[in-house]
Structure formats: C-alpha cells, structure tokens
Length: 132
Image (cartoon, rainbow, N blue to C red):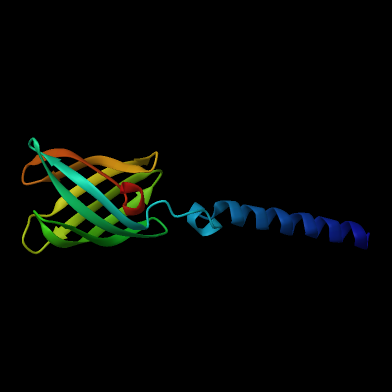
C-alpha cells in the first residue's frame, strides 16, 4: 500500500514538472536567442536606400535596444515584441519622426515593412558578423 502511494505521488510530481517545463517560453529553456545582438541593414524608401545598424536585446517576448542611420541619427527601440517569429517595434528619434517596424526572421535575415512620414516601404537586416 505504501509503495503504491509513493508511485502515485511520483507520477503526479513528474507530470506537474513536465507541464511546467513545457509551458515556459523557448528562451527560458536554453534555446538560442535568435535576435539579440548587432544587425546591419537597409531601409528601402521611395527608390532610395539608407543603411541602418540595430542593437537588439530580447527578454522573454520584449525587444529593446538602439538603432542608428545616417538619415535618422541615433534612436531607441520602444514597444518591441518578438512572438511566433513576428517582430514588431518602434524606432524613436530626437530629430526624425518615429518609425514603426514589423518583420520576420527567415534564414538568418530579418525583413519586413516600416511606416513613417505617411508612407510604407521595406527593410532588411542581417547579423553584423554574417553581413561581411
């Protein structure tokens, strides 16, 4: 009887432990953070392009960091989120209108759309170490 009760409790504890482990977000299970780090890329706007540098930091689903380009100057990232391979963030600048950015990560490349100054266009970026 005592042995059966022990086995029952062991099974219950094992099931709860497995459920907790599987319920944690992927980043907390030790999987590689696919976004944190330095990225270099390009805004494609109205037939022209502008280079940009991103420094991203991901904690859970929240994305923070910095952005800079010759056109915008330095800025910070706000309202950043990374969930289900979808990136969403706002670039805030002292001397330029904010830029709303969305995108996905595919084959080591970030790409998507950005919105600013009344228009929508494309952007892309790769990790700095992969860009050269």
